[in-house]
View (tube, rainbow, N blue to C red):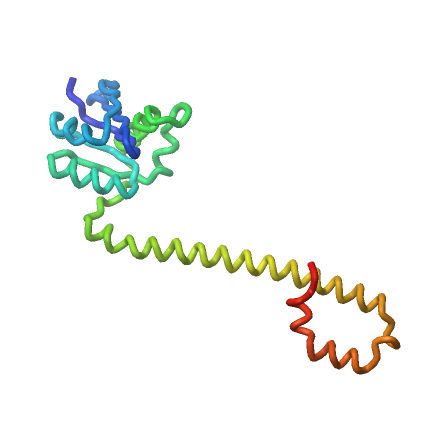
Length: 187
């Protein structure tokens, strides 16, 4: 029972492992806790390990490479077509194992700790920019609704009050206070 390829489905606490031999036959299905994962791979002979690329995948890839394994990371969207049944940890690990053995699969380079550290502030900034854009769009929508409401109210007022009743003084006052009328307009 020589395991040649392993697919690892990463999670917070429990990792699912799927291993196959050189004929592609399943020889290993195992669930491991975080504390037992490295111990398990220390007992195995060097093999090909596939994982979906994420922040923790780079950490584990560095650990597995240090003990002699070959590690390949794949973007999750490239693994998804290999999931045969409903999405669960066992099926994901099997799909990862299948995908890593494909000859034309695109792989992600393993990042060093320094590379991940440099990318962290950029990701945080990207999140802030996304939140700022969402908030500005929300404000724009709210203001556009208020403008429409105020324009409708102003048209109703013009219809109700005849031009003779308004007079020149009223028109001058309206022109001077036009922007403030929009902000004080009832919804």
